[in-house]
Image (cartoon, rainbow, N blue to C red):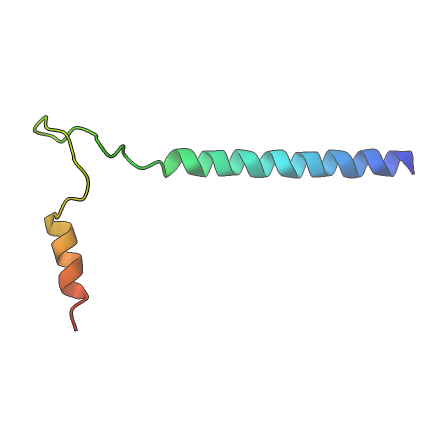
Length: 63
């Protein structure tokens, strides 16, 4: 019975560690750019920006 407890414990620790590692890897890939990142022309972003991409999306939602 003692051996069973250790094997279950090790299994659960391994599952938890692999899940945490997977979540960290996904979080690192999907990290958004900072809100005040510099634009290509050197100015700072101030928040929401109405770009052509956003306008195109809004046009697709019109009924």
